[in-house]
Image (cartoon, rainbow, N blue to C red; front, side):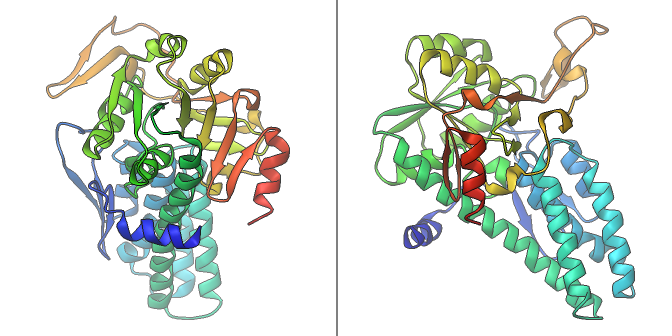
Length: 366
């Protein structure tokens, strides 16, 4: 597979670049404005990076992790510590600020821990702040490259499952916008299967309340030439009943070792319906998304501003579609029990049932 991965890496030229690093700033495609406006946000400080993550300029677990990694580098660019000891204190503060932005996506904490541990390793080898900064910058770039390679491998495993003429149901946006690479997790098999000559189409639910399916997934897929149909979230059951899809592929923000998957709200609905109608349901995520420590009850599911549900966003601003003071429950994610999942596709292979056993076997290959 290695040679094929390298071949695809050379051939893959993403039309959309959500994250770009220029040495002293992070340039982020503002996903809040897509698909109608293409605007980039420049982040030069840790606070600006934190705000970009919190306000969903950048979103999607892998992309959040990559952004946070470069945010750690910016901490040293911004503060210019005089010694390695001061640099470590600066990085500890940056890690604390960035860790409070989005509580559910495990890639955020994984990337922050990896960067801080790398700083500790560098600090034990040099007294040069410049060398620590350069080492961290190289590590952040490595995280990006590893993510792209992981997505290509996931895409190859997933493309084997897709038959010529397959129609894939997904949810939210688990494409290149969500991972920062232009390829994505749940969309990687679609793009790679298409590159390999298979005809693949997609049905994308709108994904209220932020409309990531309607605004982002549709935009990405159409830009990349994939036949795509948009549906209302509430049409998922009928679409499955009418056999308009033959496989479901979704991303993940956190996967527990027992096989529970935390992903965009509405994922559980699709999983239960797919189970009822006998449609394979696959989750795609890099192994960095697997949380080896937490139990279901430990995971905090993020809740956001009630106005996200009370309103729709237009180019003129928010428009209320219900009573302004009605009580709202607005969880961003839900949790899918392992019994509804056919398999979890990672860069290391596919974990099938029983997930609690096979995820552990898969991780032992690391």
